[in-house]
Image (cartoon, rainbow over all chains, first blue to last red; front, side):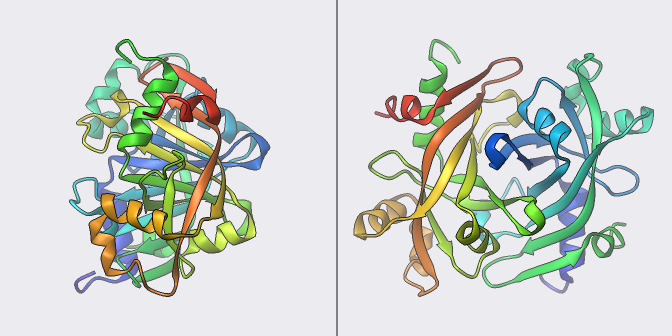
Length: 150
Length: 150
């Protein structure tokens, strides 16, 4: 973590993230993981553009509890690099700001962003769990992480 | 999917996977995502080498329901590429075969494989959910996927 605090390291991962593994609660109570593209909203909350046809969106409609795993996608040895799990609840978010922010990081989404089955959501981060390498593990409140975003 | 069936595509992702996003059930019933290294066992089941000090291992001790998200780590646009979520239960697995198989794919794990807090586990795949690009979604039984492994 080279001189940074756990909250600063988690905030860096959130600021730079393009992709995440989303955890939702599926049929039979199983935790279901799926791939999502994310940028952050102005509030620092992760933004998601989800199709209501997708399994994770159906899961979230039944139970909003969720998590997002963020990591450095370019790492040669991902297990040796920092990653953070953001845990909270996902809710719909409206408005052109989310759309502009999403497309700024994911221009490829312009192909489907206006399809009628897609809508924007955000994760309200309640807690975060940082693994910054072997034995360097820290839990923090979502507010502490968001306070570190530049 | 270029001429392959969904089960064949899912089996390819499983055979080639080096990393996965693990979903477990955490405190308060939240689905918690974390990063794990995986190879497959001789049976085709994904193998995991987990520390009992890690959050996901504590979660699994309380509830074995889990999932693994596998994808092509080298994809330039991950959302355009196939990925599969394997859903089932994780249980301990003993023996030197798991160790040899794990180290063959993850030689970097030789540093910690024999630490006393690490042990091997496997996911018994009950169902699988394949997303092979927009609108190309398929659910299958775990047995159908495992039957396609070479």
